[in-house]
Image (cartoon, rainbow, N blue to C red):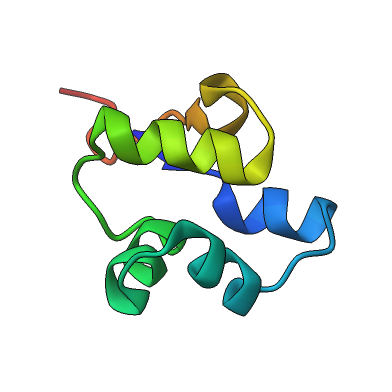
Length: 74
């Protein structure tokens, strides 16, 4: 599963969710879903804007997390 690290980066940079939404110039609900990893995809333009606002690289924002396999014996 691809995990979006926006919350962690904001915490590292001591920035608020309010600051983030204002800088991203996007809808609060959509950005909130992105921050909570409740989205199924991301546009490259959005990723580019995230990198610009958070002053980081795509690899800092997106990380691959292994899913817990519920059916190990199959």
